[in-house]
Image (cartoon, rainbow, N blue to C red; front, side, top):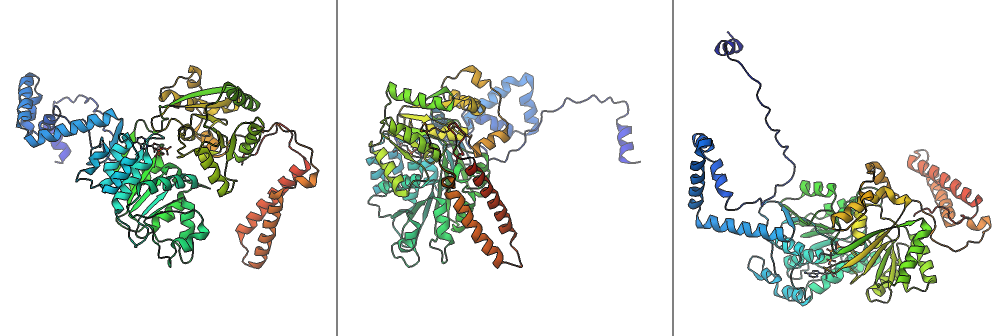
Length: 596
Ligand SMILES: Nc1ncnc2c1ncn2[C@@H]1O[C@H](COP(=O)(O)OP(=O)(O)OP(=O)(O)O)[C@@H](O)[C@H]1O
């Protein structure tokens, strides 16, 4: 008799009814659970109840035993030690504090937020007296929510991924713990590395760091010219720095020199500002550079912190995979615009309507300083010429300007010598110009993330700001998502915008990579140029490169280099296109721009 026969005999005459389907078991997510659920006095006994033996559990869950259950709970509550009660009260207080300041934390044993800078004097944090003085000299009445939570986390040497609105003081939140952690100047070499996506932003962080390190003896460096690197901090250089602030490409370049001009083996703090931008993969993005740099930071004591106003899934995945003891902090709702900016969407019909609209805004009276965003350097140059012609105190900043011009431009805008600054995405992230009153998105932002950062150049540090975004018929694809962002941050948008069709992910990705072809901004009449003059520098560059590649190809015979072949093919196509353009003579007014 096998087991099935025994089962049949034992269950003879028994009827089986179908069991009600049990509730699905939630999938265990690959995230660190929130350390602070609503642990309060009322909930604690329940935990005890869960630990009851089975017989007692039956008793408690008996519908007639409600009273017993209640009294048991009360008894359990009474039995809590004074210490447990105190702990529960503390947790309750911390939860209330986080709720009040819209702080969400994910991670184990997350330190409680502070509410004043004075609290950093506690023995827990051992803040350097000199640093404390420097902090207080800034005159900030109290820490911002991200500072309240990020400072204790980093001062306790935990890894951190922080997401907080634009202009909420993230820079101070990561510089303070670095300075406190390093404490004194050492000649061992670089011990902290802060990376930012643009030179301008790195320079801004450097300035803030110089303020905070005053009289601490710590030495901070900003890589201005890679050509000066050997003298500045090469192996023979005696003058050692403690903190390095730079863009990833410069750091990687120096690491790749033979012998390397940078040594990151002693790095104890590795901080990314605008981490989601720095983690972007693909051509012209930073991820590859970042991987090389991170690999060079071999110190096992290295603490990592990521900061941004926006986050993408790959960043969180990377952090969860690579960082031990990680805490994730979000202030408010992730990937949302700051609520201090009054946001407007303005339909301008066509490209030429934009110029009319900006002139109308000027006529009504602009309150400087104003930042105007366009999608390409060509368009920046064209708009600059137009506004200059109108007699506006305007300047322009884009990647084609020299470093010196860019520095001067930023300084003049900061000092109020320039009232309207036209810029490309280059200035979209992180830049902290005091008191920008208005941001104009002359060209519709390519993504919601870009929108959040661009408009975040105003309404900073609790001040009020205003942002106007022009849109034409061509921009309607992304209109819905940006209207949603405006609504989420308390703005009012017409209902039809929210009802618009969602764009497919593939289209959104494409738009993010390649901005729309738009009509020229320039209203200048262009003279018909003779064909040879149109043969521009790009064509002659292509011809030169082709020559070099052909020579290389000859040398590499017979082991022919296939990559050279494919490059040559591409160049032939480019030349064909350029020659075709030349034959087509000048671009007529209203022709679409190549947005490069
Ligand atoms: N506790 C504070 N109280 C008031 N202002 C502060 C405080 N901390 C910093 N600030 C000021 O807030 C402004 C914005 O700070 P910061 O540039 O660090 O913002 P951010 O959060 O990094 O913004 P973004 O996301 O745009 O880079 C700065 O001018 C800074 O001096």
